[in-house]
Length: 156
Image (cartoon, rainbow, N blue to C red):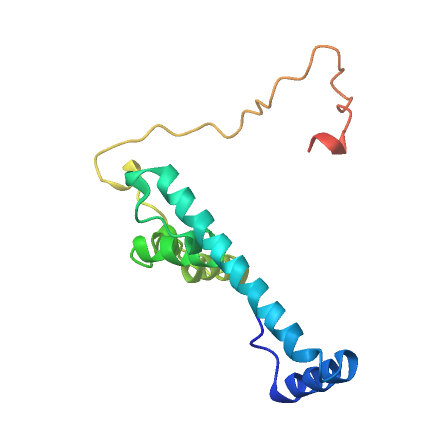
């Protein structure tokens, strides 16, 4: 908590405390502060013990430090072998370089090897699609052939 306070800041706080409270009241103030801190620590330890006893034996290894989000995440990652909760598999399955190479090949006009089709095999004849037909999606009944449907940018 106070790890970011340097020596010069600590000395400045001590000088200010002597100036504000005076040299005769300062020792009593320090004793009161340490007594209060001690009581707060005792209270928190007894509360922790009460909670542990109420939780029962199945939570005997429960640590309150695990409730800190940083500690919790670190512990969960360590339990899963440190593989970032399965992200390693996702990274390996996603081939970014291959995808980028395909895009650059298409943009630069390089042809990629075509997939083999059944018609590539000699002796087999695959049915061919008739590309001369112009079967589009059926138009709604309330629109004429020349009309276009209303464009709604909120739905896209």
